[in-house]
Image (cartoon, rainbow, N blue to C red; front, side, top):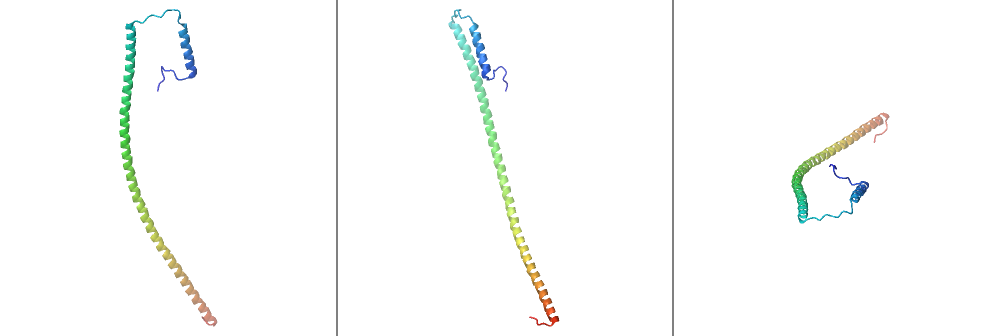
Length: 152
């Protein structure tokens, strides 16, 4: 945004500007009589002022109309974007639901296989204990028979 031709708001500069304007007005001779304005001159000045006001008002109407058009276009675009986003979110949630279902299925299958592994470990452990116990009992009886002591 260009600031050419406009004075930036600066209190010190504004004060200097006002003082300079007052000084220029004070330099005018105060003792000269004012001229009378004729009806024709007054009407011409009023018509010129009204024309300037009408031009500014028309310019403002045009800018407001352009802003309204831009707003309507932006609103339509945002509604379109919202519908697209909503559709994408629905697709995402559908895919996420499928993935979660697959994870739950895999988890239940994993639990079943872990239970199976647990049962196998327990069976192997008991089998090993029984085998070691049987070998130990057999060795004890063999040593007891070799030494001549009565077996239990």
